[in-house]
Image (cartoon, rainbow, N blue to C red; front, side, top):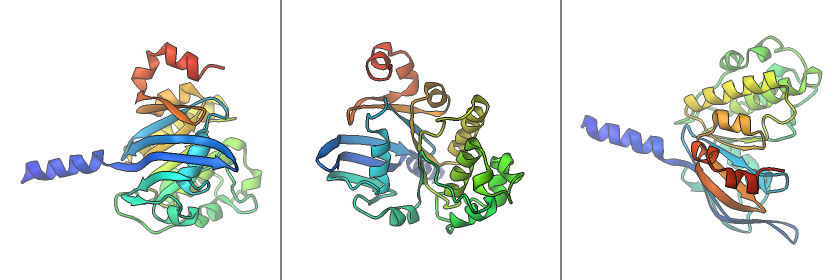
Length: 249
C-alpha cells in the first residue's frame, strides 16, 4: 500500500501542469508561432530562450489567452484553455508576470497585493502578504509605499508578489531580469529557486543566459516561432553549435 501511495505521489509530481501542443498564432496576417510544443511540470523551471522577435512573449501571451491561437491546444491543470479569456485562465491558477510590470502606481504595496488575492487552491502554495514579505523582504519594508515611488527592481518584485497572491499552480515570467541591476538579478534567482521548491511550475522567457542557467531545469530555444532545441539546461551548456546559431547576436 505504501509503495502504491509513493508511486501515486511520484506520478502526481511528474504530471504536466502546462502542455502546449501544436499551437499556431498570428498577428493579423503575420504567422508568428508554428506548431509549437512545450511542457512544464510541477516544481520545474523551463526557460524559453531566443533572440528579440523570436516569439518568446507571443508564446506566453498565447498560453495566457492574450493572443488566441489559430490552432493547437493549451492544456493547463488538465483543461484545454485555448481560446478562454485571460481572467478565466487566471482564475484556474495560471499566473502571468508581463515584461512591462503593470503595477498600480497609485496604490501602495499592500493595496497592490490585495488586488491579486484569490482563494487557496489544491496543489498550490497558499500565499499571504506576510509570507510574501518573508520572500521579498524589501517589500515588507515599504508596504505603505505607492508603486509609482518604487525602483524598477522593486516594481518587478511587487508584480511577482501580486501574481503569487492568486496562489498559482504555474507562473509565466516574461523577461524577469531585464533592466535590473546585478544585485537585484541575484535576488530574483533566489526567489525563483524558492518558488520552485514550493512546487510552483515556472515558464520563463529570458535572454539573460546567466539568470536562466541559475534557475532552469530545461531549456527550449525558439527561433522564428519554432522550437529549435529542447532538453536539460546542462545539455545546452555543452552545445556551442546551438547557442551560436540561435542565441548569439
